Image 1 (spheres, rainbow, N blue to C red):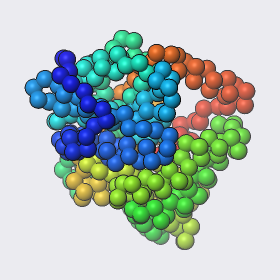
Image 2 (cartoon, rainbow, N blue to C red):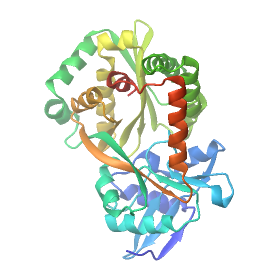
Image 3 (cartoon, helix red, strand yellow):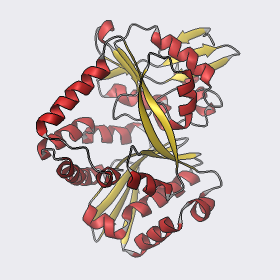
Image 4 (cartoon, rainbow, N blue to C red):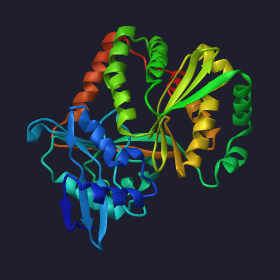
Length: 356
């Protein structure tokens, strides 16, 4: 399929119309998310509106770095900034994506990175050009069709319902904050989690905190709460006045678990994470969401098992990189060299599951 026109950046009215017409759209795909990235000062709007045959419009939310043209990097989206990919009425088609890939491949940009919604993974794989570099991904997504009572009785496993009931009897108190007020408490749990992961990975604690804080500074999370007008929902479980576990849900037309942290000594025995997800799933159902994305699972069997207990199903997808210079290979080589130098060991499955 060929395009009849491209507009960049995308006019907001047209963007919102396409966003409202795609059943898979996440809040990451809304113009407010790109505005959030641009507010950090590190990116500028590079979104593209595609006019396809048959009066069909599609939107690619995207940002670019500030750099000379030949060194620019564009992404939908950068690492740590959620899922991007194409929006189209009724959902994307392989023919839509073939046209988009052809357009992007022709651009004079050092690197274009795409991390699409895993529900559309098969369409992206069918349309990808041969020269695109791919990074395999595995994520779990819960279909919310039927409403919460149906999901509770038919999709939650018996083990999940038992864990939720235990959490409800454990004296936990749960708050849902949409203002950012409790983000410093979440960040305290985040630091506790970083220290635990660092020990398991044989990584110096100072380096682990530096990396994590650089990717997710508290100011970034605060900006999310400010820009998303209720779409950034922090669920926090307390036990005897102490924070036990938290999850951040980015919720719009669909919901996605963006971050998670816990005090393992408090959250483990009380099954706090089961209660947080149960409440967040019910909230997403009440808001009319179609899907509850539980994030990437990688090769972690414990993490995958945790998610399937809620009825989430695995979806294989990929990241795609179109490069004029070997950005991905260089980045991998540098990361591998640093890991060897410090004796870094990838986190075992149990540690990975704790990060969700």
